[in-house]
Length: 214
Image 1 (cartoon, helix red, strand yellow):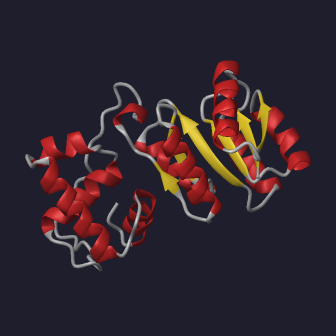
Image 2: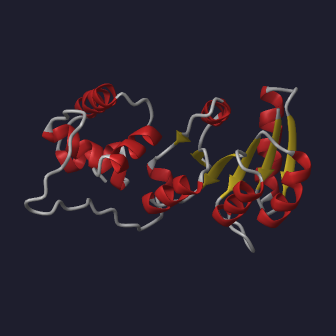
């Protein structure tokens, strides 16, 4: 498998490359120092996976990813970022990228993202560490009199949990907002996934948008 790492920080590139090769010596790992170089290299390399840094000078990850997807339809891109808001997460998913992973992710998380994306599945990590600093996350208000569709027959509490997740709340914020325990939150999320027949946060986002719950 060919992997292209795109990051303007040399230590990050070299460290990630060494990590991937140590996990699977058969992988062919290449580097690009920015989005422009990635656009030049990708058509020649035809990588199976592109690990793209979101914040880069000259051409950021989103714009570079959009250009790569235009030139190489079907290319699988995983965005890696230190800080990213829920709004940007939604925008990135609409560009056609397959995954979003935090720079604080461990080895297992990165390998899992690569595995999922190679299977054609989206992989999304939404943790407190990837929310933009000082970004205020405000839950969306429902309009009075507007009926909220509920194809999955979710309870009112499960709907609240779903909408908070989609808005960008992490587990700690949800438990504080709803005054519930982490165990209770886990039960609600399990019920949501089961009733809606979804298996990941990325699928939850798509489900919510499709059914006007976001």
